[in-house]
Amino acid sequence: MISFTLRSILRKGITLFLISIVSFLIIHLAPGEPSQIDPLNPRFTKEDIVRYRAAFDLDKPLPLQYLSFYKKLFSGRLKSFKDNLPVLGKIKERFLNSLPLFVVGTLITWSLAFPVGISAAINRGGIFDKTTTFMAYLLISVPGFFMAYLLILFVVNNFHVSVLGMRTFGMEDASFIASFMDRVWHLVIPSLLGSLVGIAYLSRYVRSQMLEVMGEDYIRTARAKGASEDSVYYHHALRNALLPFVTMFGMLIPAMIGGSVIIESILAWPGMGRLGYEAILARDYPVVITLNFVAAFLVLMGTFFSDLLYMLVDPRIKL
Image 1: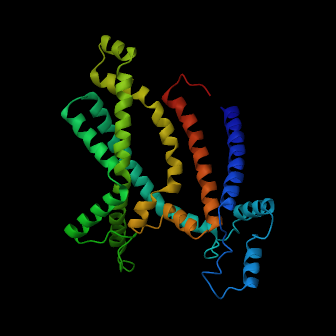
Image 2: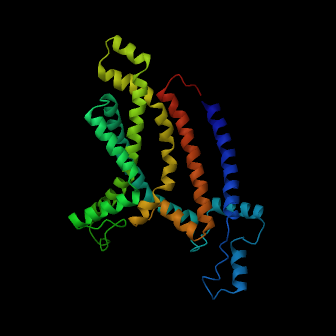
Image 3: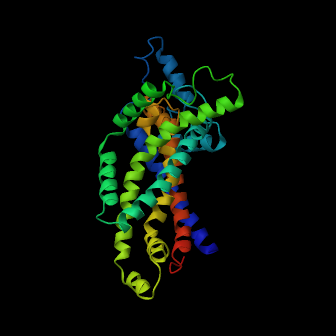
């Protein structure tokens, strides 16, 4: 166990280092650079641009820029090109905004997708299976921005309440309970929108995995030994169908960094996805590269946890 952990940390550390180099080079190979701001601000002189480039190490060779960038990043001194604020502080603030959306959306998705998928597989070809299949394909086909606008119009026209942003305007001085319930209400709509497509995809995947496993020989053997149907479905079939979902569970961790750019933009939710989108438009290299680095770190950490979870799901798997 210890040797596996050390080997895995070493391999993933090397991978993370290579990713940091590639992402840094790709960003700097893109056309344009942040110092090309003189058309946006006519008062900027050539001397101002030279000082700007020197302040953010843009006048140095790329290897020195790379070393300086990550030295400032790990020491917390890296500043945004856009507003000169600490990059880690901006990411931390947006991360805390996206975390509730991620947690609530994930709980809704996994709590509903598994019962729906399992029931559809057990009642294959029945009314429930056909209905959920139709609804799943409908949710997958409808664009997210269209669904968001429909839900906003429905809620506003029928309930006459605010749904944009993280809180209702004017609630800053309200009581703790009123402010808390307002935050919960504003959390419902984006979390529901973020989970709808996930429920559709995951329920179909659960159904297909259950149907594949239920055709195996050991399922017929369990029935022949007199095991109850619940034991066959939930002890034998479901446990063996869980292996692919361990990988999916590990990939949930990096999902925190992306969120949903469309949903966050339409609902004015200041999350991680919106931060990355704004940074790309503003050519805010420090924020973009840092988000890439954090996303890569979360992906590697998620795969590491998946490797460990495989042992709990399937004892035959050895490290």
